[in-house]
Amino acid sequence: MSEQQSGQPGTPVGSAGTAAPVAAAERIASLDVLRGIAILGILVMNIYAFAMPFPAYSNPLLMGGMEPINLGTWFVTHILFDQKFLSIFAMLFGAGIILMSSRAASKGARPGRIFYRRQFWLVLLGALHAYFIWFGDILFMYALVGMLAYLFRNRTPATLIIVACCLLPVAVILGYGLSAQMQAAKAEVAEIETLLQAGEAISEAQQQALDDWQEQRAFMAPTAEDIQADLDIHLGSYAGLTAWRIPNAMQFQVFGLLIFGVWRVLGLMLIGMALMKIGILGAARSAGFYRTMMVACYGIGLPLTAYSALDLHAHGFDPLYAMGAGSSANYFGSVVVALGHVALVMLLIKTGFVQGMLRRFAAVGRMALSNYLMHSIVLTSVFYGYGLGLYGSIPRFWQMGFVAVLIGLQMLLSPWWLARYQFGPAEWLWRSLTYWARQPMRRC
Image (cartoon, rainbow, N blue to C red):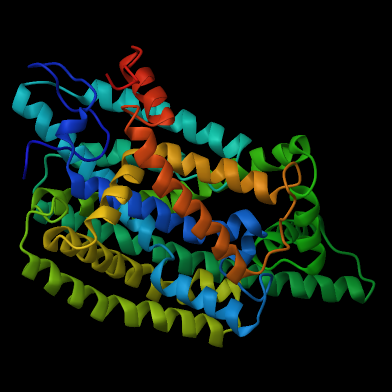
């Protein structure tokens, strides 16, 4: 692995025994390219949650148009993007931990205190992002899970892969359990509603079960009234939307962390650590290796994710089915497809193909935090009521036009900015808080 470049903006080492922000000349270009592609790939899926009620993210029957062009858009994004680029992003987070700790060890530094301080500020930033801009934030979860992943930094690649393989299935098992619980609750509520229709009195416990189901149903299987209520909230005032967003974001954070983050995200970070240690993410392997890896991963993963899309369609996008059996193929297939995407990017780097475009992706990756936050600021301003108010009115296919424009803008803006400044604005703030010292911003 080259020691002349570094990847994840982390805690590299300055003079012996001291931690300092990473210098531009120390970056590992392959990690920057991957990070830029991951952030932009995440946007392709996140647009659904910006532009429509969240249940429509995975259920095109609810909103977004069922015409072939819109349904086809859902199929393409599900097969190629859904969970794939989030997986790459998690792997890169793990890779950054290895890079940081290995450099610190070579200089005799102890980076733990700096790392956890860095994570603390990312937790806070993620919370502010979720509560006051967009509830779908991932920074909060990734920062907390990263604190756990750091404890595995000295493990061998084999150990990291084994632990990851033990962690990843847990989320699927929990999903099956939640699906069964929800199915039982749905059946119980059907019986209670039958009693009410017959004019019979129900117990307090039955009323509580009915109330609980109404809240869960509004999220899992919303009615037309639920969809309209969501539209009214998001097309209303900023104050009203924030009052709705804060409790829902908190619930999303807790649920996501316990059901998804500790198992899938941590497992993917450990995989990223292993891939960094054996040179795969650093573009240290041969072009032939990456070609074989790409063919194998796509050959296994794409049939799984395509089957997932067809299976969900065959079951009418039933949310309770999707929570359990309907999620398994894409859950595991997305990891394999993500590795295929990684191999493809590494192959492009090794062969020198489209280098100009890859440099632009690298610039986006160096400003990944700023660009991620920019997605939320721009798209909430476009879709929410306190902006242009387009929420719920743009079909799924045409949402991709907003994605294309924003991707193009960031691929132009990021190199322009980095030619003048050392960091993106959010990266500068994060580093200054981490080291509790104002970092130099302008290039000399």
